[in-house]
Amino acid sequence: MCGIVGKYYFNQNAGDSSDIDAMMQAIYHRGPDSSGKYLSGRAALGFQRLSIIDTVSGHQPLYNEAKTIVLLANGEIYNYKEFVPLLESKGHVFSTRSDCEVIIHLYEEYGIEFISKLNGMFAFCLYDTRNDVMFIARDRVGIKPLYYHLNKEAIIFGSEIKGILASGEVVTDEAKDSLAEYLCFRYLANFRTFFSSVNALEPGTYVRISPSGCTFETFWDLSRYVLNYAQDGDLVETVDAALTASVQRQMMTDVPLGTQLSGGVDSSLVSKLAARYSPGLKTFTVSFFESAYDESAYARLLADSAGLEYHQIRVNGKTFADTLPKVIWYHDEPLCHANSVHMYLLCTYARQFVTVLLTGEGADELFAGYPRYQICRFGDAYNKLNPSVASLVKSVLQGVPARKIAKIVDNLGLGARELALWNSSFATKEKVSWLLNSGDVALDARSALVDSVWNDELSLFDNLLLYEQKSYLQPILMRQDKMSMAASVESRVPVLDNEMLDVANAIPYQYKVRHFTPKHVFKKVAERHISRKIVYKKKVGFGVPVDEWLRDNSGLGRYLDLLLDTARGISGVSRPRIEQLVSEHVSRKHNHGDVLWPLVNYAIWREQFFK
Image 1: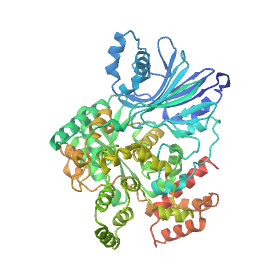
Image 2: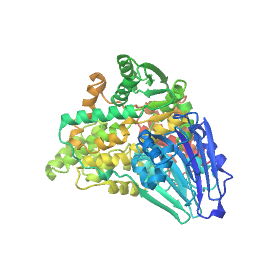
Image 3: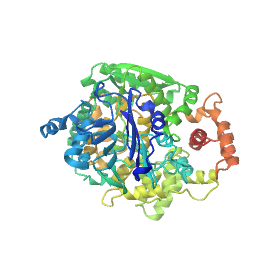
Image 4: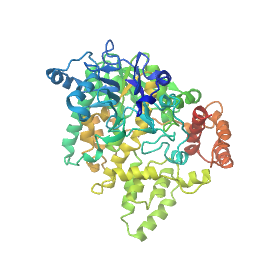
């Protein structure tokens, strides 16, 4: 686990490496164990290493035997040992035991097409100096981040946006229409960032870079999957075997390893499976003073029953508020998830004991775990009613005061693609438009992403899950990567292993949701290993009581004044309307945490990156 930064100039005489040290320093936290550089007239590359595999000799950059190929790689290649004997038999000589060195020799043997053979999480830069061609690439689902800025003179890239900005060559401002979309969904879709001239490289993609420019190529696509499972019992066995193999595969390390244990079914199952191969494994849990958000009792239950070593931290509103600005800086953008703060604090604590953490991320997106997916089920059924019955149903539901019912009503009458898009919203477009004193919320990029993954031969729900992997899963993975790397901890996600992707994306939706039970197949697997009390408890989702903390001046509420000051300088933002929301929220007249929480993030982010 590491961090990379780099530049490639299309005109060799225009190269400038004077800022590479500043770029590396900006991501130092990702790899404090060692650093390395490669400099030439064409390229400047920098590397920060967190030593995990071959801690003695696996320093980077890595080179081939003739030193004509240069590699900087962030991540882990879990199936690297499969390639070593074959490559050695073909005459390749390995100079380290590093998992990443196979990338170089695979490229020499097979060309860039080798990338489809890798099972791992990675973002790498490979420079073939003999042919003057560079490749940057990102793993299948985007577990590891990779950002880039492209102009007429060069492409500048890095594991974090701040590494690119540190080059001094990127003049950027806030991305157009970013605030409205952020307030609705709490992240930007379609691999855009909040910086106008910096994008995220799409997962499953590599860029071929040469003096003539850049070409983007897809090496892995969700659309290749065929829904081909039809037996519920067989599925349980198949998923169980795949997840067990994935957990075992991802436990390879030369440094201490533990698990991030929330108390939910996903992390509990991963922890229990990991305990097979590492008895007494260390687990790490966050607890809350607010009982409605605290799942630590379930985490303790799992740890005790499996004989795991249990570690816990407890976070209150003041600590959360104290830590928030630092977390936003590490994240590079306004937060999507409030629990990013807790994840950072947990990883900082865990770093005293371990360097690698296994997590349960990805199960909800692969196996349909979010309750909000029911919005699409209701919407799809509503669209099949005759108009008179549909009108009656809607009028009855409108009379129900429950918040969740209100969200269902808001989405009634939407088409399939709109249901997939809007079920993940936090605030309504009407409220956001009112707040910003604007017309309709611009979501062209988001709609384009829905269209790009949609397959008319699949059901709404199967399309929804494919879209979720390209959308909502992305900020989850960036939270996991950036919060762990901020603490110099490597985070791994066995549920998103290649084998698990192959299995999960071939399962039709009706086997993932049974009646109103989400993650049906996944939970049947979990029943084999962990207590039903954990498997079938109400989903909490690592929530954070930000609505209440916003009313505490010693906690999160301290940032409301900054929000009001910032509103003066933001084009299109109505300060009087923000003042109204703040007043109504603090006085408990209405709950406006849905927009005040992201607005506070946005205000802090602007203060850090643009003031």
